Image (cartoon, rainbow, N blue to C red; front, side, top):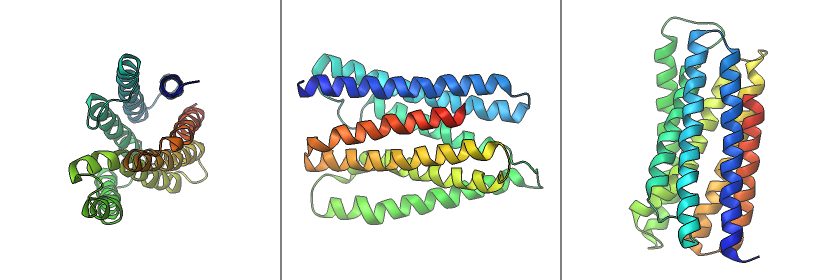
Length: 221
């Protein structure tokens, strides 16, 4: 099996697993009766739709050229929008016990987690790699985008797990947090393979991405 066919199969597998996650999110939203919960699940579904569109663009370019789209591309912009929708889901989903200023506290938590991850990514990944001249800072920022958002989502999932300890939703957020961890590993491997030109790492990163999406689908269901 040649490299182009393997790449095409990998992109199709990721798109199919994200479609499964979208389906379970839509089904879960229909079961809910609370207005805020349904609104939050709407953000989750919108995030999966946008990420699926990003995969569709990758599939189109891969089919036409035999290679992934350049960085940055339309798929990267769609992925950014999808990640923002997933962050909105984790922020909007209400805690079991509503407190005064709970929404303001949620926004503050998001800012703290996001700034911590962004600072860590800049110090550990973007600045050192850019300093040795492996890639310009702009390209590195786009390569680091997915791993950074994965870690932000992981932090927000852990926050929801603590808020919903002992509740039925705890399983969902724990599964989504585990999926975010797998996605962070896969996206880091993918970024490293692009920077180092090590194509042999690609099958591992694609397989982990598919597993993470299926885990997220299971959690949403």
